Image 1 (cartoon, rainbow, N blue to C red):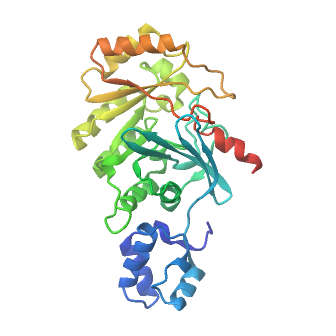
Image 2: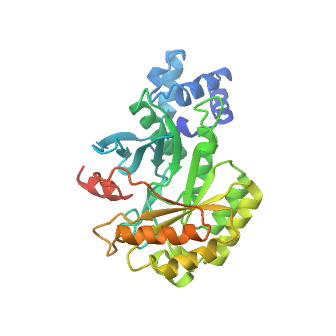
Image 3: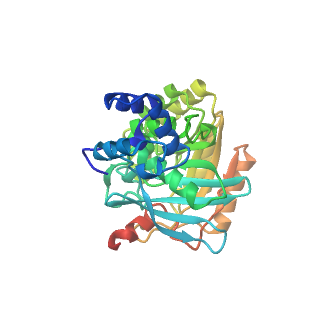
Length: 346
């Protein structure tokens, strides 16, 4: 996306109206353009056939429709999962369309790279390049929606590359645009936002009072282990994090979804399970257990299936609401960041 042009896809209706008024155009043109972008999912001004050609020419000189394009598409022969490599300017990010009995779920990225440096994650390899704009996040949804027609996207998950709360303003604008009734009109009750635990961001998100699901990556139940795996814990420890989660529930009434990636020899022992029970006791929440996706650049491994089942059983026996995440796209490069890293030569 050009530095000097206005990204039409990232503008709210009132901002579009201001832009059109500055060009001496009637305000209803803003509604037309917003409908083309977020209702008909137009990717060029030429598609907007009810706009005068002269206006389209003028807009093309000062504006653009920023976004991503699908550059690579891998389809699982096992379950139909689609792994997307999106081109975002000179950068690449990833998404995944997962098919469930209850509908299709699209996982999208919020940043190019990540600066959280979680020890087992491929997304953070190479660090953070930049934040994605709200338009670039939206266009992951829109491009994928067009790709799978006539199927529909049933839910959207901000759980791809990047830490959404580290790109707070763009993510909030994305949510506002995604759910706008004059456009795509996607219910935020069908959106999940995943964070590694940015406490200030969780508190700020609670004030927005979006009806989405907050998904918090735990991956350990004590500060020593979590700080080894997730450097963010050195800034916001588990006490701070759990207090923010309780505050989020009190403000929004939305129970927290916790993620726990099982890593052999790191956080998968019976003692770890017992500690996790204590951490979650009394919290309105659900826990997703995720066996690790092996990453060649990381020296970690997933537990044996029997160990995973035993860990889950110990939690269930003590009343924890827990699900073992169903693995989808097992024949693809499934861990976040792996497909992007493989795109270096594209």
